Image (cartoon, rainbow, N blue to C red; front, top):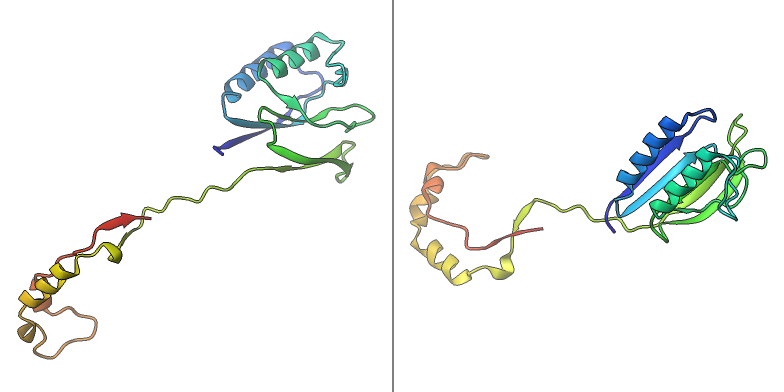
Length: 181
Protein backbone atom coordinates (compact mmCIF):
# COMPACT_ATOMS: atom_id res chain seq x y z
CA UNK A 1 0.00 0.00 0.00
CA UNK A 2 1.18 3.51 -0.70
CA UNK A 3 1.07 6.36 1.80
CA UNK A 4 -2.12 6.96 3.72
CA UNK A 5 -3.00 10.61 4.26
CA UNK A 6 -4.81 11.28 7.53
CA UNK A 7 -6.61 14.58 8.10
CA UNK A 8 -8.26 15.84 11.27
CA UNK A 9 -10.94 18.50 10.97
CA UNK A 10 -13.16 20.60 13.22
CA UNK A 11 -15.91 22.67 11.67
CA UNK A 12 -17.38 25.26 14.03
CA UNK A 13 -21.21 25.18 14.03
CA UNK A 14 -21.43 28.76 12.76
CA UNK A 15 -18.84 28.45 9.98
CA UNK A 16 -19.76 30.45 6.88
CA UNK A 17 -20.18 29.03 3.39
CA UNK A 18 -16.98 30.61 2.06
CA UNK A 19 -14.84 28.71 4.58
CA UNK A 20 -16.81 25.53 3.84
CA UNK A 21 -16.05 25.99 0.13
CA UNK A 22 -12.32 26.41 0.87
CA UNK A 23 -12.43 23.16 2.87
CA UNK A 24 -14.21 21.36 0.03
CA UNK A 25 -11.47 22.51 -2.36
CA UNK A 26 -8.79 21.18 -0.01
CA UNK A 27 -10.63 17.86 0.20
CA UNK A 28 -10.71 17.70 -3.60
CA UNK A 29 -6.92 18.10 -3.76
CA UNK A 30 -6.26 15.68 -0.89
CA UNK A 31 -8.60 13.06 -2.36
CA UNK A 32 -6.15 12.54 -5.21
CA UNK A 33 -4.20 10.48 -2.65
CA UNK A 34 -4.54 6.74 -3.04
CA UNK A 35 -5.73 6.38 0.57
CA UNK A 36 -7.25 9.33 2.44
CA UNK A 37 -8.81 9.26 5.88
CA UNK A 38 -10.61 12.32 7.30
CA UNK A 39 -11.80 12.33 10.90
CA UNK A 40 -13.27 14.97 13.13
CA UNK A 41 -16.25 17.03 14.22
CA UNK A 42 -17.89 18.15 10.98
CA UNK A 43 -20.91 19.78 12.74
CA UNK A 44 -23.67 18.99 10.28
CA UNK A 45 -26.40 17.84 12.70
CA UNK A 46 -29.14 18.00 10.05
CA UNK A 47 -27.58 15.33 7.83
CA UNK A 48 -29.53 12.08 7.66
CA UNK A 49 -26.83 9.53 6.82
CA UNK A 50 -29.26 6.71 6.10
CA UNK A 51 -31.06 8.71 3.40
CA UNK A 52 -28.06 10.85 2.49
CA UNK A 53 -30.13 14.04 2.80
CA UNK A 54 -29.85 17.35 4.65
CA UNK A 55 -32.08 20.34 5.41
CA UNK A 56 -29.50 23.13 5.19
CA UNK A 57 -27.66 24.23 2.04
CA UNK A 58 -24.19 24.00 3.67
CA UNK A 59 -24.87 20.42 4.75
CA UNK A 60 -26.12 19.49 1.27
CA UNK A 61 -22.93 20.96 -0.21
CA UNK A 62 -20.92 18.90 2.27
CA UNK A 63 -22.74 15.75 1.14
CA UNK A 64 -22.03 16.71 -2.47
CA UNK A 65 -18.31 17.13 -1.62
CA UNK A 66 -18.25 13.67 -0.05
CA UNK A 67 -20.00 12.20 -3.07
CA UNK A 68 -17.81 14.02 -5.63
CA UNK A 69 -14.65 12.75 -3.95
CA UNK A 70 -15.85 9.15 -3.50
CA UNK A 71 -15.81 9.16 0.31
CA UNK A 72 -17.62 6.70 2.52
CA UNK A 73 -18.82 7.80 5.96
CA UNK A 74 -18.26 4.93 8.41
CA UNK A 75 -19.73 6.01 11.78
CA UNK A 76 -23.25 4.71 12.37
CA UNK A 77 -24.09 5.85 15.92
CA UNK A 78 -24.77 9.36 17.26
CA UNK A 79 -21.73 11.02 18.80
CA UNK A 80 -23.31 14.04 20.51
CA UNK A 81 -26.81 14.47 21.93
CA UNK A 82 -28.43 12.14 19.43
CA UNK A 83 -26.66 13.69 16.41
CA UNK A 84 -23.92 12.16 14.31
CA UNK A 85 -21.40 15.02 14.19
CA UNK A 86 -18.09 13.19 14.50
CA UNK A 87 -17.26 11.34 11.32
CA UNK A 88 -14.73 8.92 9.85
CA UNK A 89 -14.52 9.43 6.08
CA UNK A 90 -12.34 7.46 3.68
CA UNK A 91 -11.89 7.11 -0.06
CA UNK A 92 -10.45 3.58 0.19
CA UNK A 93 -12.60 0.60 1.02
CA UNK A 94 -11.10 -1.60 3.74
CA UNK A 95 -8.73 1.10 5.03
CA UNK A 96 -10.57 1.40 8.37
CA UNK A 97 -11.96 -1.41 10.52
CA UNK A 98 -13.42 -2.01 13.98
CA UNK A 99 -15.19 1.35 14.33
CA UNK A 100 -16.63 1.72 17.81
CA UNK A 101 -18.39 4.69 19.40
CA UNK A 102 -17.44 4.71 23.07
CA UNK A 103 -18.12 6.87 26.11
CA UNK A 104 -17.20 10.51 26.51
CA UNK A 105 -13.56 11.46 26.79
CA UNK A 106 -12.91 13.66 29.80
CA UNK A 107 -15.46 16.45 30.14
CA UNK A 108 -16.35 16.52 26.43
CA UNK A 109 -20.00 16.07 25.49
CA UNK A 110 -18.92 14.20 22.34
CA UNK A 111 -18.48 10.45 22.41
CA UNK A 112 -15.10 9.17 21.29
CA UNK A 113 -14.65 7.04 18.18
CA UNK A 114 -12.14 4.21 18.11
CA UNK A 115 -11.04 2.52 14.90
CA UNK A 116 -8.15 0.66 13.36
CA UNK A 117 -6.33 1.71 10.19
CA UNK A 118 -5.53 -1.37 8.12
CA UNK A 119 -2.34 -1.49 6.12
CA UNK A 120 1.07 -2.99 5.87
CA UNK A 121 4.21 -1.33 7.04
CA UNK A 122 6.80 -0.84 4.36
CA UNK A 123 10.31 -1.85 5.26
CA UNK A 124 12.52 1.20 4.86
CA UNK A 125 15.16 0.81 2.21
CA UNK A 126 18.72 0.78 3.45
CA UNK A 127 21.44 2.62 1.61
CA UNK A 128 24.15 0.47 3.23
CA UNK A 129 26.31 -1.32 0.72
CA UNK A 130 27.76 -4.68 1.66
CA UNK A 131 30.00 -7.14 -0.10
CA UNK A 132 28.37 -10.24 -1.53
CA UNK A 133 30.99 -12.94 -0.93
CA UNK A 134 28.89 -15.52 -2.77
CA UNK A 135 29.77 -13.66 -5.98
CA UNK A 136 33.47 -13.24 -5.13
CA UNK A 137 36.22 -14.22 -7.56
CA UNK A 138 38.37 -16.25 -5.18
CA UNK A 139 40.86 -17.26 -7.90
CA UNK A 140 41.62 -13.58 -8.54
CA UNK A 141 41.80 -12.95 -4.81
CA UNK A 142 44.41 -15.75 -4.36
CA UNK A 143 46.39 -14.39 -7.31
CA UNK A 144 46.48 -10.87 -5.83
CA UNK A 145 47.47 -12.19 -2.42
CA UNK A 146 50.27 -14.21 -4.03
CA UNK A 147 51.66 -11.12 -5.80
CA UNK A 148 52.07 -9.13 -2.58
CA UNK A 149 55.50 -9.27 -0.83
CA UNK A 150 54.07 -10.46 2.50
CA UNK A 151 57.44 -11.14 4.12
CA UNK A 152 58.30 -7.44 3.82
CA UNK A 153 54.77 -6.29 4.66
CA UNK A 154 54.62 -8.27 7.90
CA UNK A 155 58.18 -7.38 9.07
CA UNK A 156 58.85 -5.17 12.03
CA UNK A 157 57.01 -4.23 15.18
CA UNK A 158 53.34 -3.56 14.64
CA UNK A 159 51.62 -0.86 16.61
CA UNK A 160 48.13 -1.70 17.82
CA UNK A 161 45.50 0.31 15.99
CA UNK A 162 47.89 1.53 13.28
CA UNK A 163 48.17 0.33 9.71
CA UNK A 164 51.82 -0.10 8.67
CA UNK A 165 52.85 1.95 5.62
CA UNK A 166 53.65 -1.25 3.72
CA UNK A 167 50.07 -2.41 4.21
CA UNK A 168 48.82 0.81 2.68
CA UNK A 169 51.01 0.09 -0.34
CA UNK A 170 49.77 -3.50 -0.64
CA UNK A 171 48.04 -4.07 -3.94
CA UNK A 172 44.93 -5.82 -2.62
CA UNK A 173 41.74 -4.73 -4.34
CA UNK A 174 38.17 -5.78 -3.69
CA UNK A 175 37.14 -8.78 -5.71
CA UNK A 176 33.53 -8.84 -4.58
CA UNK A 177 30.72 -6.90 -6.17
CA UNK A 178 28.91 -4.44 -3.95
CA UNK A 179 25.21 -4.99 -3.48
CA UNK A 180 22.64 -2.64 -1.98
CA UNK A 181 20.46 -3.98 0.79
